[in-house]
Image (cartoon, rainbow, N blue to C red; front, side, top):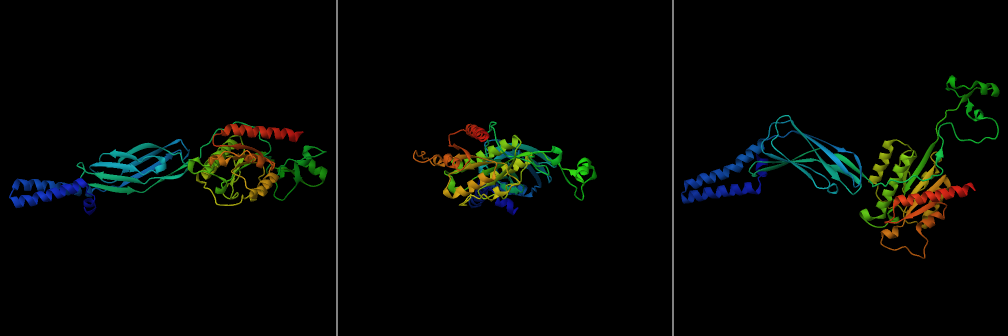
Length: 418
């Protein structure tokens, strides 16, 4: 009852004040009819508070987001299920699912009295232009009497997570050189004489299955020889995203950093679709980037990482990951402005990789400054280190720049062949 009285609305408090005033005036003036009116006006909010206060709500709330990962600018559906496991309630119920501001306005539903074993499912859409991870919920319930004299607010715990990934652009097919490597015991080898049989066997090791013994080679060599375990070659690629704050310009959605995240996400999705085993690294190194893999959940993991990626205050570009020869492959870099201290790292990556390609953002355009005719373009400085690079501005199309990068790769492959 105490909670219900604390939930009196302005109208309910006005009724109490008016009823009390009417009773006092009726006593002073000797008007019995006015007394009855005052008692009625005074008792009405008290009765409403008593009825609303007796209500006990035991609601079951569950919600799901479909899909759990959604690209920025695309809608997602939230399915909300509400069930009543308590007693029957009276009055109107205003249900409000708390939604972060970035996902739009809060979703509100008006429900009439809940009966026993009552259950209802409702759906609504959310949409965000900002990447990130958002918590939807909890559920807020507002209980009011029909006269609007008492209103109680209760919150039911439980949230669900919606991950908004960066926007991606479909990229066209382009010739990509390098990146192919073998795994397991079978490695590409060159031999001048003999047959393939000579390089597809090895000495017997304890624990090898006897059915793998190659008897013809064993008879020729004089020792037991077994067939090698052959593993298929796979195309490997590393996507490097320079997320240092110092190499980007602009603020919010209009910044070069957000453009770089979108470019990296588009490259990751495209490479996975054409069969590359992709890993993602940042200016802070390869930690948390995940292993190579082509499964769908691996792509989702990298997109989720990009959805949460923030700029770093790191001064230098970490290239320690490029020394891992077990990965190798092609490196696709998304770079901001290049500083003299970045040259050793870019040279090391170029030396350790079979092929290096870069999309260089002209960050000065994001700052509203026109490119200087006296200074070389940002991509020219990267090309000087042996990379194949193209520049991108805020008004340039990514798919067109990707095609230009493919033409650079094709010309490089032809010149290498000559």
